[in-house]
Image 1 (cartoon, rainbow, N blue to C red):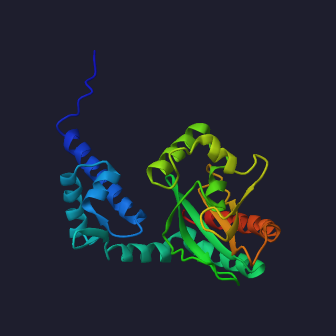
Image 2: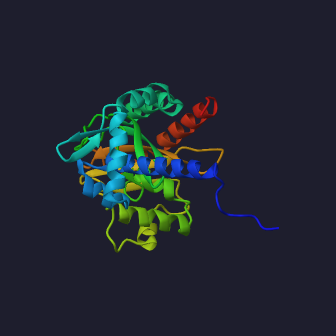
Image 3: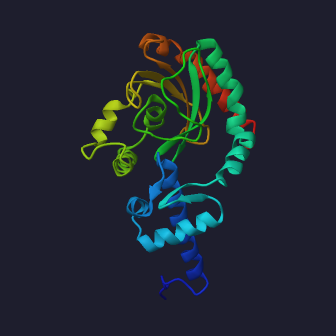
Length: 263
């Protein structure tokens, strides 16, 4: 007896709907990554879709307020704000992290930040400023590479070569790294196997130093990290690394709080 691999009449439309949803979310994510409004042709090229398909998706997203259009360019729309507000006010990770970050920033005098991994990127979900202001604006919700910066690298410390290859491919495709970027060059950036923290200087932003540890996860590999960041003139590498024990305690505390919540 053979089993047909063809979708049934009922499964066909469902599969098509899911494919359409996936494509729409891909276009939406690409707009999130963009630093400025995007033209239709640029979005279609970045997402590997035809112009008509991309345009249909954008029109649907516009209908729901997820995308806005000015002239011939598209950008994220106002409907994302209620969703962002709900996340910041109700997500257990953010709610639990605020007092933890406040304490570590107060004790070290450095900017404390919490990142969560999303695919092959990381997102800033909470931050408490230190005594020395940073030289750049990094708003909540910003998508950042895993390949640059202490907070990203620590989340890749125990990754396999296969996973790193996917990270490398995504970084190159997203324009975060050059075509010559390899698994070997990424490995050279990551912490030593015996280290439980990552350090970076002048990697993602010039004149900025950072150190990060992963938030323990009893259910699997860590998907969050806490970092301390400072302008280079306000803190040395030794100063940053001296804050690692405090970061470890903060990460452990946050992990305990999350285990006690519905997360």
